[in-house]
Length: 68
Image 1 (cartoon, rainbow, N blue to C red):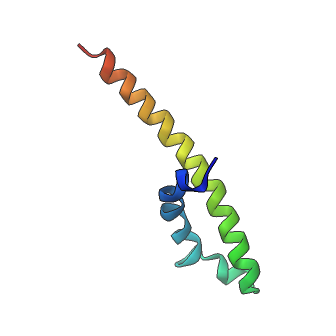
Image 2 (tube, rainbow, N blue to C red):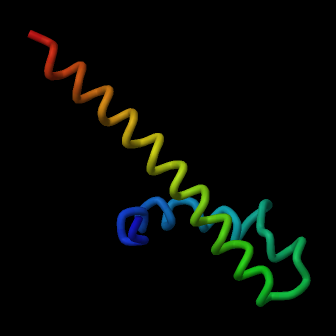
């Protein structure tokens, strides 16, 4: 899977781990390690979000096609 297919999902999920209460930079002392962990976690969660949104979209499309 190309990263371009989940770029919007990455955009949506990465901010939570970079800033605010759930910032991993607060818990990880090394900034380089923090960037690597945030990137990896963002990729995994973005991929899962992509899968969930595809399922929801497919279900809605199926309902709309059978609705007559």
